[in-house]
Length: 258
Image (cartoon, rainbow, N blue to C red; front, side):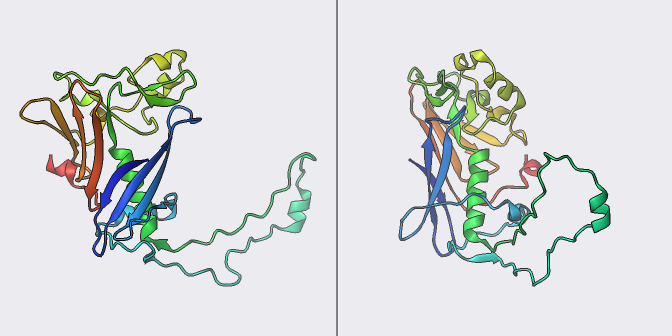
């Protein structure tokens, strides 16, 4: 269980925790998010994102209220008679030849849209932020012979000369790059450290800001797409991490600002 970050709200903030289960998961661990609304700090599971309102979430550019059950989009249940399946012409239907082994089609249940709450929006935004950020150094994780991802005990940290190179940092998520997916399917994938997506290919170009301290030993990696996410790594050590502290709003104008 890890601390993931905090999303600011108008009335109260959301604190987010991340649970990781590595055992028994092929190529990448299972992620489960939890939230706590201040000041209770009682963590509850975040549901799976409601894709039904994906477009509405993408277009929202207002701050969170801090009220999980607040209804953002209310839907009315269908009136009686709506959504009924129209029967085909019985004569035409009987004329059709069907294989004896072919299963008869069952009438599909009507899916009634649910109200879209702020918790639904939180689930979508947390998932989107985690997908676009959550950075780890190259070599910090490896695949086991069972294809389970785990911490690399032999990882000694990036060299001081490497820590400012974008290609040395990877997205800690299910692989999305097609070439990396092909690599994972090869028998020798367990011997490679570059098995996750690199942030160097993120668009728009310049989506990340990498800055070191005065000693050049500590790197801070900031997302310009999701302002508020910061990762760090100390050269020559196993120390790395990251967290998000922001308002949950994406910088959609970044491509025009660079």
